Image (cartoon, rainbow, N blue to C red):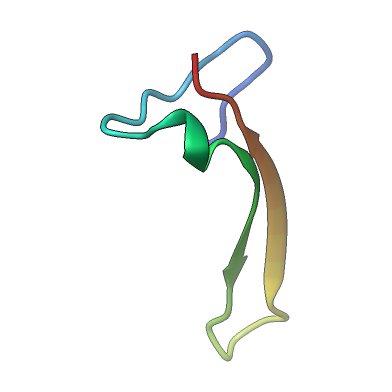
Length: 43
């Protein structure tokens, strides 16, 4: 699901130690692999 500016995704059970930059990759042998980066902030 794509989130627009000002929207949030709640992730339960996460700690401040786990905050930071993450990379998600997908590959399915039909098209080229895709990679997206996200910054996770823990309040």
